[in-house]
Image (cartoon, rainbow, N blue to C red):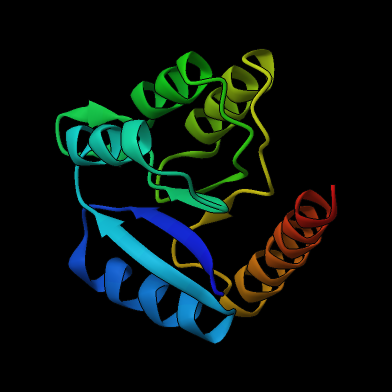
Length: 136
């Protein structure tokens, strides 16, 4: 069974790249381009990892972070954004204060080898957690 990755990104070129990276790392990627579409999925499904662009049209990635907090989610989040360093750091601080699981952030254009490594690490942890849950 492959791990589930939710890609929240409004730029088609980045969606395409992230979808390919996901497959290379053993994930099945579900891609959405808006906060509302992501919220609908997050309320109905679970994912092993989320990649999150911080600028989604007229909405902000912080809306997703607040929803994840409301849902008491422990799903790892990777910020992938072209936003300024200060904006990314503010989102990392917010996620940390909310108690969310945040992995290293990536500036666009993305360091693809580093992203692959991060996704593989998260997949390994998710696999171990699933195995542990199955034997309990």
